[in-house]
Amino acid sequence: MKKFLLIALIALLAVTGGVFAFTFTTATATIGVTAIESDFADISACTTYSPPTVFGRYTGTWPTGPLFDVTPSANYTGDLIVKVYLVNAGQLIRYYHHLNMTLEFLDSANSSADKQQIIQVLNMQNAEVLFEWENGTGDSPYQVKLTGGSYRLHPWKTITDGSYQPQIWCEITQR
Image 1 (cartoon, rainbow, N blue to C red):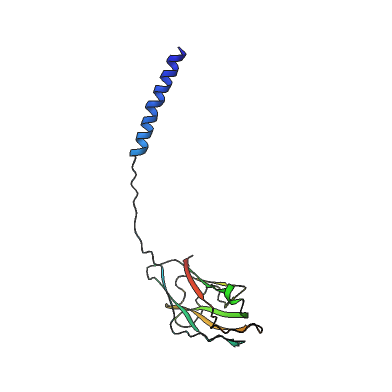
Image 2 (image 1 turned 180 degrees about the horizontal axis):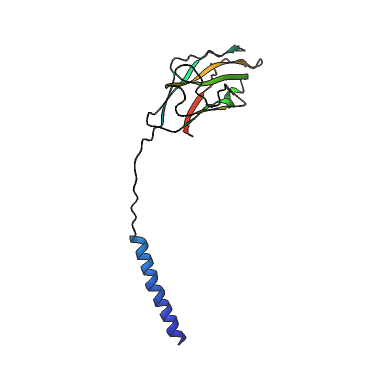
């Protein structure tokens, strides 16, 4: 009797296991997908900005001007986060005693388009600033502008092999 139950159990497992395996390998599902425009903003570096040549034991101020042009897509109805990074702070810290850049996010009328309505300071200790743009604020195109700041190189470090300039990166994400 035990043999009969054991054989019946093994046969049952073989049949049901085969059904599950067959179902698993042949199952299909249909998912409806709708494509939407993926670009929510265009960004480009301004070619008109000209940074100073920094060398020797120099101290100075940053010339003001636009760094990035930002144009939200006409079809995008959400808000945006604009992040600006100083990406080579590790290299600059060996040469600069201090480096401060004041940045603003402005609309085409030169008014603040940032929800916080404040100037942000980018430096080697704070290598990221963040602007919040609410859809409908100001008129496009928008700009990330360098509106001031200063720098001073270390007095003991003489730069003889070129100019060490900050590298600025701008990233736009959905809010």
